[in-house]
Amino acid sequence: GGKPSIGLAQQVYCNPGDEVIYPSPGFPIYESFIRYVRAVPVPLHLDESANFTFSPDQLANLITPKTKLIYLNFPSNPTGGVASKSLLEETTRIILENCQPNVRIYSDEIYENIIFDGKQHHSISSVPEMAERTIIAGGFSKTFAWTGGRVGYAVFPTIEEADEFKRLNINYFSCVPPYNQEAARVALESPLSEQAVKKMVETFESRRNLIWQQINEIPGISCQKPGGAFYLFPNISGICENLGLIEKHDSLPLEKQSSPANIFQMFALYEHQVAVLDRKSFGQIGADGKHFLRLSIAAEQSVLEKGILRLKNAGEDLSGLDRFLKERPDLTSA
Ligand SMILES: Cc1ncc(COP(=O)(O)O)c(C=O)c1O
Image (cartoon, rainbow, N blue to C red):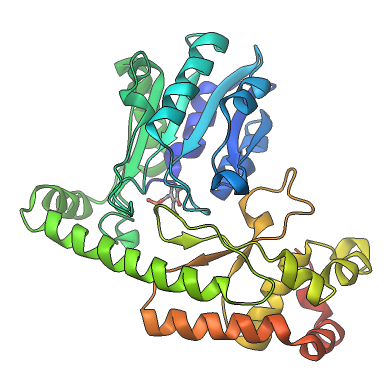
């Protein structure tokens, strides 16, 4: 799938002590793999008030002579944030001014076709001077709703770099099963694909509109409107306050502490039967005090509406929460 090349990039480009900049919140492997290669994680915190993008100055402040890799992911998992062309142009300026030519941008564009509001996807590789510094990553899991196929790809700036990846790939995975490669070819070449993908994206967009509106009606929740992908990333600070989750979290024994949002995640799952993920699932460094959940809208509308109702009920169920904390101490650690 699209995932392996994320970790392989760190193995190919980084030595111990090198620094890797990655979006936070972001796809979990960006941060979690960095320690495996003994590089140094440098989170680029996405700003809720800027609909989960970043400012070029923020990036400039993180770049040092040790920076080797910079991950970008638009449209984003988990926030649904998208990058404007001007943000990518500004980012390019910062990179050209501050980075050695051997620094690589890993542009994870796996949600490139799932964009709403009539907007277009922009890739940093199409900004002048960036093609030779960018690895473009994509895959078939999202555009073709085919997570089980495990087909993904990365495009490299040089043949030598692609060869290095090929050597690792061959030894880790051998290959994508040929019948799945064939299915991927059909998906790419079929004249039916464009219409099918368009219809899927329209369905995601109408679900996004509905669920975004409904979730913002829940007391204690506020949610930015995602511009792409199929996730919502609501701020649940109000729920944490209403349920006293911050104090309840802080009074747990140290080894049981994860985050207030994680307690709510487990409570919602076990007591109200709705599955969400907490902020810390998407990068731990600097996540304390940030109270968010990630919801996926890759399910039928009626199921999603039921889920929203259950989240609302969970957010108001103070006595249920107290009972849960007493009866299920096994579920309140990370
Ligand atoms: C941002 C991002 N990148 C990469 C992947 C990997 O996709 P896959 O391995 O399913 O192709 C995912 C999957 O959720 C993702 O959200």
